[in-house]
Image (cartoon, rainbow, N blue to C red; front, top):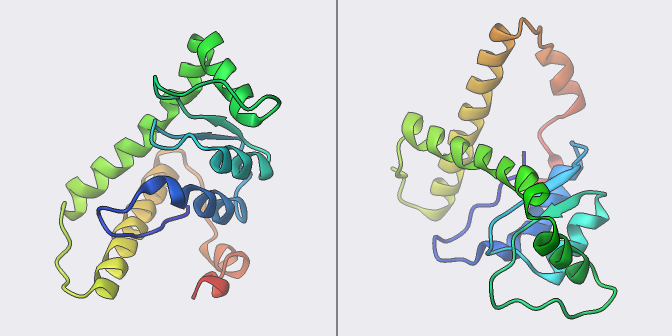
Length: 161
């Protein structure tokens, strides 16, 4: 998981490269789906750097210029292969479901006052959500999780502190 907390009015698209890069440290990312706020040359390039394929729809005012670029490649795929594109793109519904679950289970608002405390509160909500899903799935799928080994392999990311 990768998470960036920002002001509610911040443009999300500028955070995508950092999120992809951070997530790729611990996960083999094959696909990245995002909504129409995210198509940009930089985002396509950063996703490609980690070996993943982008599934980001284009706005109606976008053009297929930039010959030979990833922009043009993805633009043409988006318009020429809508059915195939949508099969992959709609995986982002999982993210919306996770956001809904976090809001339902841990409230839709932050209770702390300072910006640092609010960021920490948000991180804790996401951590609690991930742990509860992990525990539920471990019981449901009868998977034994070695938390000690996980801690040894993925100690709190020291470089992010």
